[in-house]
Image 1 (spheres, one colour):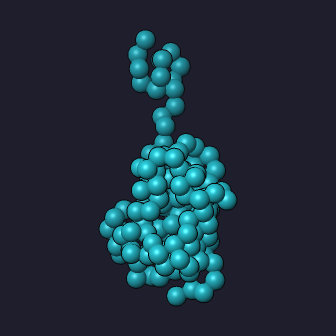
Image 2 (image 1 turned 180 degrees about the vertical axis):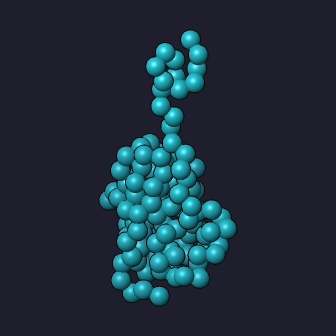
Length: 125
């Protein structure tokens, strides 16, 4: 177990999250705001908390994160990815449940670019 802060990065679509995890009481701060203030949608908050709930660490660690780029859903996914990575650095025994839940895998899906002569990526005129 680590006594100091653990620093990890999570990514999703065009969003990137830097996560700092320390032992604590369960406070989550995103861009110097509380989780509830930063993410208005309950689904985004649930996505962020998923990795903590799977490992039952929600009330044992404090998380301070900075998120940049993308939209709300991408930022929530990036934060979940970063938290999962930080938890594995905090305790190697948490790797197995996080891997089974799929939180350690970087979701490689990106928006497909628009092509010349088409209205969108695949929509024909």
